[in-house]
Length: 97
Image (tube, rainbow, N blue to C red; front, side, top):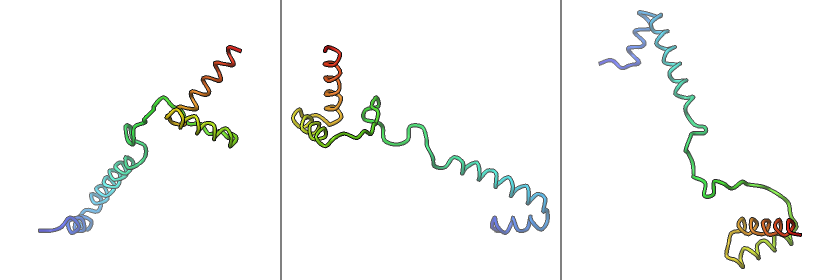
């Protein structure tokens, strides 16, 4: 029994045009397959714990960080929740005042 490689070598000698067509078609198919490899895919990866939250990056004083950490520990909540509560309370007091 002949291998694929042997059959293709024979075809290359007997019918170069057919060989060329087969090789080009194979190359196109391989390229199409490779295009689907990697990259972003729908529903891939870890699901968001809080999908409605948005990341921000701001610089604040060390004192503000200490107060935020203290508040979150005192109320047994995350620093994110503490920041939400403190901003909401501050905003509410500004609107009332």
